[in-house]
Amino acid sequence: MKNPLKEKILRGQPVVGAFVGLGHPDVTETLSRAGFDWLLIDGEHGPLGIETMQTMMMAMNGSNCTPIVRPQWNDPVVIKRVLDIGAYGVLIPWVNGKEEAEAAVQACMYPPEGIRGWGPRRAERFDPDYRATANDEVLVSVQIETQKALDNLDQIASVEGVNALFIGPYDLSNNMGLGIPPQWDNPRFLGALESVIQVCEDHGKAPGLYSNMDNIKWSVEKGFIYNTVGEADGFLAYGAEQALKKARGE
Image 1: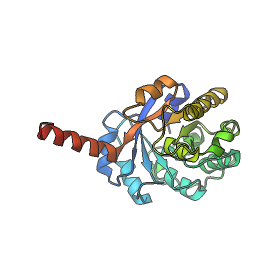
Image 2: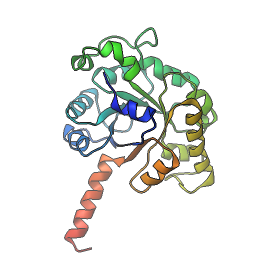
Image 3: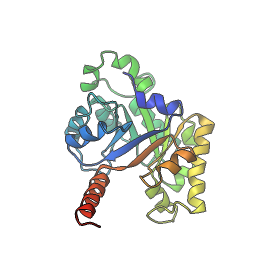
Image 4: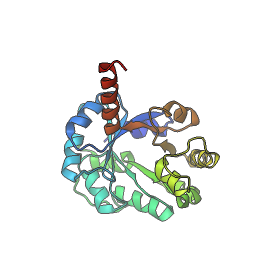
């Protein structure tokens, strides 16, 4: 197994991806060939079952785009299943402390480093060396979404095996009492983002941010490595709106 996304972010090369909650392989097939470095198949907020996730990843075969899955929760059974069907990494939601970060790493790793059970099915099928390489190549990212996570940043980032700290700006802003949508010019919010960048630098982790089309340039300039430009349904809505404006001469 060779994970190009992990290789890029750990050497400090900014990457751009998109979240996908629309449960059809045509979506990932199309977006994976648009030039994205990675796609996030969203099991937390998207209505996606394990079979759907597998077909969505299969549709990415032959592209240069890396499939990452956000499982419903920091659950070793769920994490094991999404890795077994071919995810190259996971984005674990709602990690608030060191123990939760350690649990996420343990769920992704085969013994003796972790507790992941053997049965990779599809993952092993396309890579006979999967067992020998998986522990080094699977990308383990944890989401920073609460004030508690901010308070425990140094402990979370100190966990060996965590590769990236990825900010969920909407939940983080909401949990800081700043509401939704995020106030990108609020000093407290900006200070929180900067603290994640700094702790990642201190511990050799990659800082990530759910950014969008309007602030992706700012995000990269700020120092975030692991970035997005939005979601598949947002691209669909935006494209439809632009087409209608042209059709109506607006």
